[in-house]
Image (cartoon, rainbow, N blue to C red):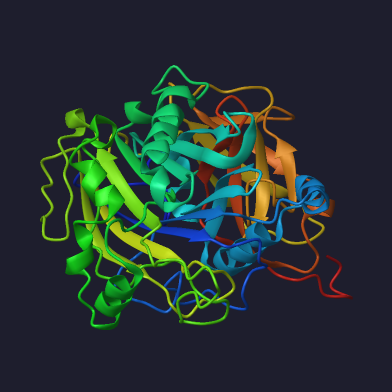
Length: 450
């Protein structure tokens, strides 16, 4: 048995080069309390075959937070979480993190093959509305380690209106100062190797009048507006924004639109168009990275960031904001090459027959009597979306050196059959630390005796 040296389709082969490319797809969207649209294929670029996406990060603002809706969402997943999960799970993406604060929602999905290399998950939030007592404005964040690099995703909704640029900076300063993770490793937002900051940041286009702004947009002369964009200006003046990078604003301002339309606001208020919805990033000095649309990768650096696409999606009209997406290629130096736990099914699994599971762990794995192995259908949604599970330490047998076996009761093997994974859940690490190859269970057939 060579379990701890090779598991088909999962274990990184020892001796392979240590740099990998990891694709991120970030979406920010103020959904204006609307329900999800019929389709987000274009927004998630699900039909594009040009780049592999390893992780999706969805940041929403103004999710319906009326009292009744919010209470229902606390018991059941909110409609937007269900909606995005239904799109991504069949493609092999698993929801590993989610956090909501009133109308702010942040979702993180990872391709299942990376689950053993995603660790140290934490979430947190900070309110800034009503002097910090109300969560209509503020920030929600998720952090996680990917192949040993700490990434943080911060979704913000900052104060509105043209004259509140200074208040937006102050609110962001408060979020950076107050938002903390319950972890000795990188407890503050700026402690991470890589920080992505996005959301409805609400910065406006100052000085220029409505007619000039709209005329510049119609003629695609966005460069005439860049120097009056409040965020672009603040990045050169405010220390708190030092080090944050952003792609060129080559898309139309994303606010404010008539609903179900590509026409800017025609109401009595006639809000001036603005790039309120943005995606920025900041890489720590010790990671020696950078990032721009023209920067090439440098495999000698432990972490580099390259922006591939920065664009809005005009076809979505459920809100008065248009969603913005950013796709990135990270080049990571793998700081560990193998999962903490390797596991695999033994023999052919049949409904009614006990299933045998073999597994082994690394010597530094912090095991627990509360660890368990779950049986998951291909296309599972989260670590709780198992068909059945078995406690690892119950009836465990040592079969060869550090290789162990446990048995899954045959009555728990689904009679309908299908394609499955085995996943090892670590109680101490609060996540999946090992994933088997996929395998097939044939359906139960009447009269076969099984």
